[in-house]
Length: 549
Image (tube, rainbow, N blue to C red; front, top):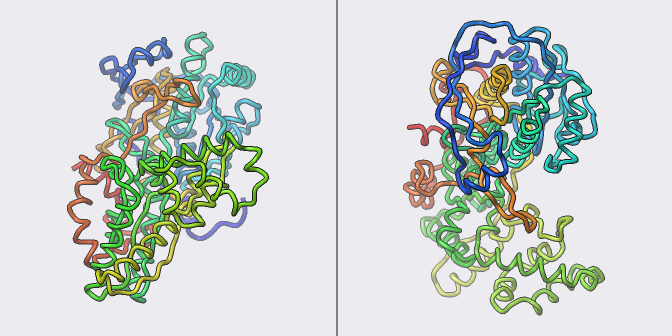
């Protein structure tokens, strides 16, 4: 390790909290609930997961200590980084050692690719201790290879067998845990003797349900973004001359945007799920934002702050149709388009789109038109995450305000600044909540291994209460599954949890946003606090607080 900072040195000594049931290592009693089902497409899911479907929900309680035979386990970090991943591994390591001090843990390098290619390192006390309570995934690194083919499963088995591994823990999001479930089914169906356990990770917050209160990393990332947004709000209220359009991560769901709004009280925050539900057009969104700017200007406030979710454009019906048409048009004319200059492609697209989509396309700023025509992924699709939605809305609001001024409906000054907060939050030092939650998830995964279970996701609940009241256990990954169309085929996947418009967090936001829009009601959360009074350093997200009330 390189030289460490004073904070990292102090954090290394932090002892994360654990649920009561896990505090005596191997002394865990397992209580099984009733058989479970899937969230949708039950018969199809049941047919795919013949041996793991219907497993019961598990709850752990303190029990009598028992001697466990020594085992070797493997661990994988899969997908994008999230604060707390190292603590999941530390908790898993300590939990395995509590079952038997001779237990070993192998870390596969660079994600699932390491499992397939047999690239690994043994994790020792020295390595684990160097990474306790730190951010990032740099201990063993991550990757995005999907474990979904028989060839992958066979390679995984061969490499695990060679290393003597009888249990695998996959730390990842919905896709990664779907792959974990597929792998667990393959191993169990073929009697290969390897358990598979998942841990819920994603800063986007869209891996959650009754049993998984939150995915790890969401708390820390939202605090990092909220600190930055609060700083910008303070600056806006000081300079009083800029409107700041802030885009935050969250392509498939708006949990981050909503949580940051609840923490900072901006003048506007867009929730993609509401846009989709109301079938809002881009012009309606722009008009709503322009009206907020005009209302504040009428009170002499020519400044403000707004929050935009990263995946907004995919939730606007007309933009969704436009993107689909562009994907097909450019793919069908790939050779012709390849020879064009960047500036020529928008004109080609506009001339060949349907009338409706051409109208929408023409309303977009030129820079966005160019992005839509040029930035493609390996499959030929628009790279939505690269679209500067914040810049697009800022420009379009400015244009709308000019028209309103000409009609005598606006008499203020509008100058915009744009920001995108994404990578800033993915590897931050975990908050106390994430440090505790992640360590517990890892320790709990070891308990699932000790209980001989496979195809389960580690679950730690009731986390808004003191750790003495946390509930540890596991849920079958199959109960989160449904069938979705992927690349022209029906695939089993964990259903993403979108923002619920009838949920308490959105309802609270909806009840207050009109007031926040006109008033300067900013809240400045400040940086994450790791030491001090519990009410300052042991906070939970506003989302979790409202959901658990």
